[in-house]
Amino acid sequence: MKKGKNYDLLVVGAGPAGMTAGMYGVRSGLETLVVEKGISGGLTNEAPEIENYPGFKQIGGMELAEKIKEQVSEYVEIRELEEVKEIAHEKKEMQVITEKDAYRTKAVIVSTGTKHRKLGAKGEDKFIGRGISYCATCDGFFFRDKPIIVVGGGDSAVREALYLKNIGCEVTLIHRREKLRAEPYLQKSLEKAGVQILWNSEVKEIKGDNAVRSIVRYEKKREITEELPVEGVFMAIGEVPVNELAAHMGIEMDKSGYIIADKSQRTNLERVYAAGDITGGVRQVVVACAEGTIAATSAYNDLLELR
Image 1 (tube, rainbow, N blue to C red):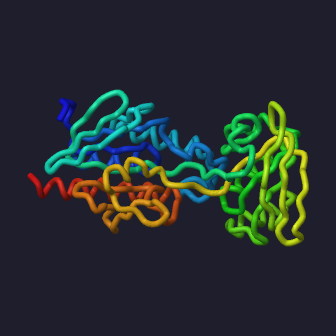
Image 2 (cartoon, rainbow, N blue to C red):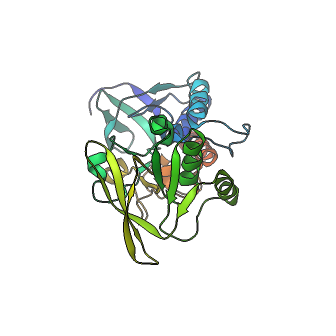
Image 3 (tube, rainbow, N blue to C red):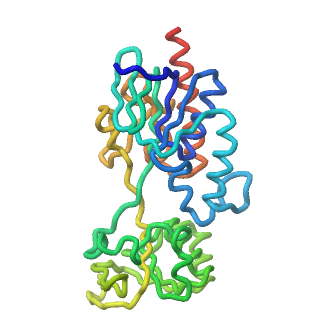
């Protein structure tokens, strides 16, 4: 194994789960490091508003992520913009190889989270960043007073539609079913805001020149196809697990690609744990923080037995 600094616990991913795990690792007396390929916060940074995190009636996702990072950084080092490329699992310790360094650790918590699911419509890849967005808070400002669509029917889609409507966009929501999956509270807010909904509809193609100019919609119930003029398309159709690292390690996953962990966040590999959205289930910030806490506590208990 290459030489590198030794740690008791290394956390991969600095979303709410990873950051919380790092804090609890240090508080348990473990030499801990958190490594993140991007910036801390994960997809929480993209949530326009969060109304169900205890302690805050309403808070922006980016602000909440920053508050968590500010507190956690008092305990543990978070190395951002450092992607983990490989983890070699040995009997007594593991080697974690990143794009910048190599580390040795006795335990690993995988909290790599999820990424946006793509729609798969014709023209989607062509217009990403040129009218197609997966983040209303990141790009919504550029579409004020312009006709845009939000694709999806869950909590994220409705929150994004409400946010975009509030900042002055001309919003239409497109959903493939005839009933939304979002919380009733959010559905009522959407109705109150006057956002138009196109039911039983699928986006078949996204068209334009240097930017998005229209979408082709297929309505299943009436079996009609029409072209609608829009200048922005915001995708909110769910997420898929970021599981490449887990797959390479041989961590067991379910049929959807989420890591299988027990109630103590242990995986099938010894001293390898998983926490947060990568484990599927109820993908909420409060749940991710709880799983990060449990994973770090389990790591501490397991390493204590080795001493």
